[in-house]
Image (tube, rainbow, N blue to C red; front, side):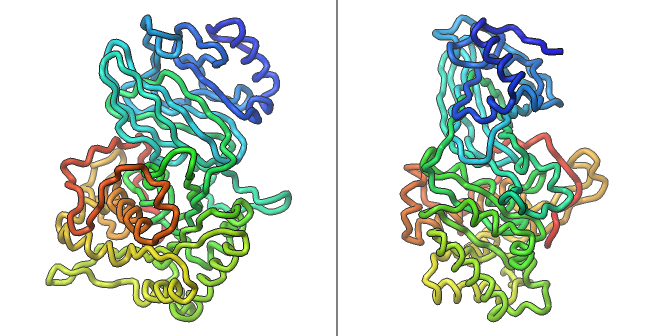
Length: 445
């Protein structure tokens, strides 16, 4: 049975066509959504709170949160109503693989709003978009959508847990969160020209799907200008360079890479556990292989040394637990004339500035019962909280500035300099948690 919810005549005709031919909707170059039960703007599809996602329809809210509509008078149809909820809520759109510009309109004629936007697996795109009473904000960001398929006969070998990830399906999923998210409208348009920053790495880089774990890779999209640059994070927990190649994750990246795209490579934590992999021999050879393959596609490789684990000596200084792997990467960067972001060196300064006790706030250290179903305390000295991942992301941004590449020109204007010796205060860190929580730490340590 097909049910058409309250919407204008033209929107009903468009929605019916989408329900009959869902592929037509997914393949459209632009999608426009007007949220709420009020009047619908011409050319937009109305989305009301009861519209749950279905593949046939091609869009809708994900279950789990009660979404409600608030109507007003408004200067135009897009601003006359909005949807909101008492906690984070999700909206998903069926869409082909590729890069997309997203325009978001937030605000309320009768009140204030505060919205943070994440996509897919908690990938940070917009942060603390605030509007005053009667004010509306139009924000734009660029997001990457991908599938495991490489070509007609090959695809990435996903781990079982990845089957439930939001970033390997045929949808672009939005997480609306913040103190008062008030969503008026959403427009999605294909972007064929943005430079792509491909991320290759492990659990310290991956878009961590579940709280309280986070990584720098899912934080850095927030620091780039929209339409010009997009981040495609192919990192996965537990990966080494060797397994990254073996699972064909590198092949997928190379199949998508175009001239002028970037490839950030950060490995070491899991590579060092392979007894037959010597840092200055096998590890360097794998790095060189990836560098050469990226260059053959016209890509620009950048090496990122792995950050230190939280391991202090009796004098309050960080102990190097990564052996010669960071130095092998530095050496490779010099020999291959590749840009280097020395996150290893910056993280040493960062963790020592925080100190042995306060640095726990940057890592997943929580008492038992801090999260639902968490019966035992978290004491993880490898994986980061949102706060820790955010500080490392700022280190990456400073590293980009120092490489001298044109990528620095695509950063948001006016970003203040960041000094690892003076990290942001934890008490001032205002970052909304996602409702997705688990009590099992990611692979790797």
